[in-house]
Length: 290
Image (cartoon, rainbow, N blue to C red; front, side, top):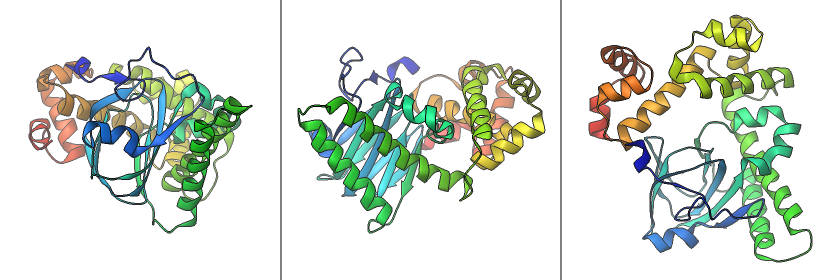
């Protein structure tokens, strides 16, 4: 069952053991070495995590998809993302964790940041790039601040959380929207749409209903999604269903029919066709290869 995937605050820590800091940052080795360099599937509620691999590597599985890791790999993991790691022994790097509330200042001043950081991503950057060096320097400074007990520590950690999240927001803007910065009005609309999809994706509401609830036309909504996310509004809905389907196939023992009904499909056969059209294999074949 889905409930078998544990939710932690930080890996291995109960949800009640919430850290009081605006930002928690530690080297990858600190936690991974304690678990034999293998981190089992889990998720975090209301917690963004940002990884930087500077040495070693391995692999990660994020929402049912495998990705290689090597020096220069960066990971964006928004809340409720199921993830696991198999690191090579001695892998070096950083993991920074910030609650959504810690990033409120960033989201208020840069509305598009919430949508840009709203989906998991594994990026690969040349280890010698200036952008990656800037992220590593910021994380090193943040870790030094985290370890010290100096006046203004909480304010400084909040500022470092914003800087790290901003780096990933810019990286995702480059991936999804090219070099043209979107207008705030479009970003606000797309963010509201993504939030509404998150709340209603199992209801299979038609796009016209989403647009009506947001007070815009379907063509305008889809155009804004294409400009900011590189995909249509309809694909945003379909992609959210696919994320959930992959999670259930990889991390649960539910039958295909059970998954189909849980995701709001009235006909398991239609669900199987929907899945196969987007992945290239049937749900059962996908599960067998996972």
